[in-house]
Length: 258
Image (cartoon, rainbow, N blue to C red; front, top):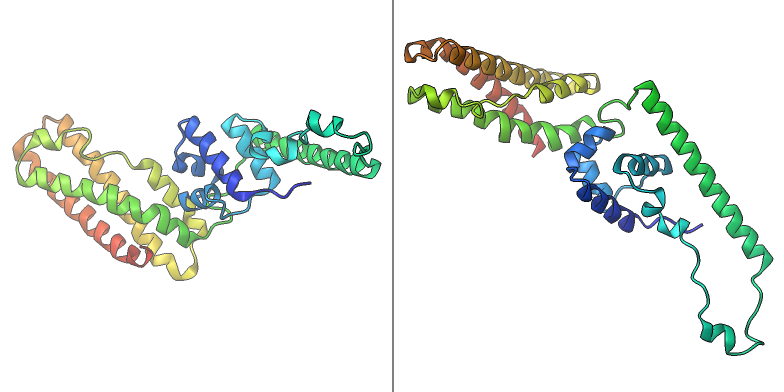
């Protein structure tokens, strides 16, 4: 049985993912891997179990043999020149080698069947591995939480403050000003069970910041639904200040995870 070429496997996973139009983030979410783990897999830096390869093949709709060609491809046949050059050179294949190849193929087939049954049972039971399983909480902070806070949540709060300062209600009521981050908030709550004891206050500040951001979003939507009068802007000021203060605290706590 040939060893798995991790670099070739990673490259094939990346090609299959891109062919399906799936991002690294989406792939990671499905398998409870963070983007850093997906990048390491595609770079050949992280070893995959046979069961994981089978699950990837199922999700990306490709045969398992696409990821493991060295296990499933037939050995190259001898060229006509080799077989006809000399009768004395043509030697029958060793029975031991044939039996060994057959045993290897049977082992691979059994492993693939077991992996497929495992995946099927998971789907039927509606179960999934816990978020971030096999990866540290700190890796999640570095790969997901900090980038979302700095590049998604914080700029939205700044845009709201700019619109309010300019007393521009049309700007404030633009649906793209405060995007919904409910999915990220749910992810933060899911990771709560993984928080190490020494990072409890950090996670609390992160959860508080995203909750206040979501509350600000609700209040902005309500302000716009009520007619978005300039006189009503003062009613939003407290929510904006609370969201900004919570954001600053969370980002300061996340600074070590650049």
